[in-house]
Image (cartoon, rainbow, N blue to C red):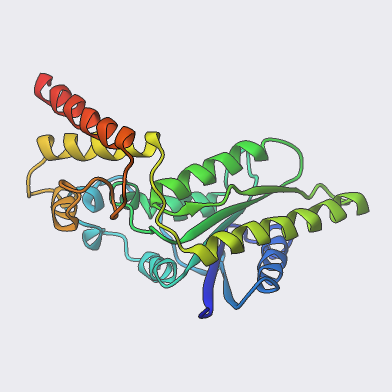
Length: 258
C-alpha cells in the first residue's frame, strides 16, 4: 500500500494540550501503517472573518473578496487522504480560530468534495461540554463529504492526574486504530437513508429554484448530480432506489407549491 497523507488542523494558539494530543494521535497512527502527517497550527496562518456576502455560494469561491490563506489550507485538505480537526473547548464550542477556519469552508457544505477521505475530530476540555463539540465536528465532517470516524474527547483540567493521562493515551491508541482502518479502505459507502434524502431533495429543489447564474447550479450540473443516484457512483438497494425516487417527487412538489 502506498504511503497515506494525514493533515491535522489545530485550532489552538498554544502548542499545549490540544496540539500535543494531536501529535500523539498522529504518531500512534504511524504505528499502524505507512502514514505521513502534517500538523497545521491555524494560528500560524492568516484567516479573515467571513463577511457573509454569499459570493462563494452564489457566484463561486474564487470571487471571495477576502485575501487570506484559505486556498493554501484548502489545498492541504485536497492533497490529504485523512484529515483531523482538533480544537480546545472554548465557551462550550470550538475555538474562535477553528470557527473562522470552518466558516471559510462554508461553500463546501453546498458543494461537498472530500469523498473517500477519512475524517475525525479531537476536542480538549478542562471542565464540561466537549461531547457536544465532538458531535458538531462529526456533523461538519459529514457535511463536507468525508468518511467520518466519530471524534473523541480528552480532559485536560490542570493538574491532569496520572489516571486521566493513562485514560487519554488509551483513547488515542484506540482512535488511531479506528481511523487507520477507515483510512486504508478509502471507501465510497452507500449513503444512509438520511444522507440520501438530503442529497435527493436538495438537488431536486436546487434544480427547480436556481438557474445557470448560480455556482451551485453549474456545479451540480457539471458533476452530473442532477441525474445521479448520489454524489458518487454507488449501487442502491431496491428500498433506497424507491426512497430516492420518492424524495425527488416530494421535492418537486414542494418546489411547485412555492
